[in-house]
Length: 356
Ligand code: NAD
Ligand code: DAU
Image (cartoon, rainbow, N blue to C red; front, side, top):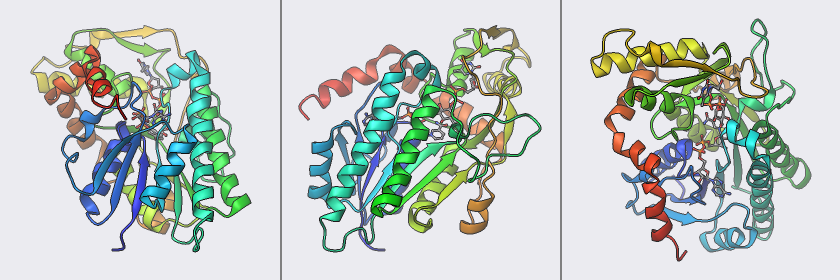
């Protein structure tokens, strides 16, 4: 296996930490740089098991900072970028869209431009290089309950400030291929679940609230339908596509696993109650219907046939198995979540990296 120098942005976040772990463990000959600003969503506790590996390095940096990133590319001779850093929470985007435009759009553009200038300065140019952008199914908009799934050629129709910012960044990535010939790939994935997800998101929030006997705030009637994929299956898809995906292509990633929110919530309640030894149905009374999310999309569902047929990827876990693993992980790792709730995880890293 050839040596590669790869930057993974957003590696201290939920999905990024799984991608970093997979690459560091699977490719000891690679030089893996985890570049992350450590916003509220970044947590180096997610990577404790690999932080001392010789092929791993953490760099605290904002993707919007062009000069330091350009210098990093030169110094580390970066030939691959896997870009996950983003503001990722839809509810926050509704309250503060500017931060989403800055990080998701301008940050992505800044990385693209630095990569362009550096790679074009090399004798071999773009040969052997790759800019892989991780995006979301939400850029396609909302599906009717009885309609087809999102395919790679489904037109973009984002509704939330989050999905609008991700759609814009996807377009910039494709523009750098079409205009300058940069070897880019974009993938659009459905909802991920699993360990290390920030507890503002539905599944970890609800597991933790059941543990703490707090209300479970269900938006609207809980009838929105989402398509769920275990995070390690997404990370495996990213590995496969980074190495074997075709330049300039888009791949949808999803497990054909649609759930109405309220049904998923009942599965979570049942699983947590069983593991904690509560009688069946014990925590159903915590369900509290609250005002719906503004512009809440009715349904997302990904058709990942192209990825399955062309590259042979398929999800490894059945949903029931994935939910069981996930619930057990959050219940077994209460300190991880308690450190987030208390703010402890950030104070530690702010002081640790204040000189960088
Ligand atoms: P996350 O919020 O858990 O992590 C985001 C990471 O990016 C954090 O570590 C944060 O510190 C970092 N970051 C944010 N702004 C930054 C900046 N300006 N400079 C450097 N680092 C910065 O997000 P996630 O759920 O792991 O999502 C990762 C990526 O995958 C995002 O691009 C998201 O749009 C995409 N995605 C997520 C899902 C999902 O279900 N979570 C599904 C499809 C696609
Ligand atoms: O579809 C992929 C997207 O999935 C990613 O691009 C995003 O980065 C990621 O955050 C996720 O977005 P969602 O908005 O789907 O995730 P969230 O966990 O915030 O919400 C899941 C569903 O649950 C959604 O329909 C809203 C609902 N919900 C959420 C929360 C936090 C509730 O009913 N109550 C809640 O408290």
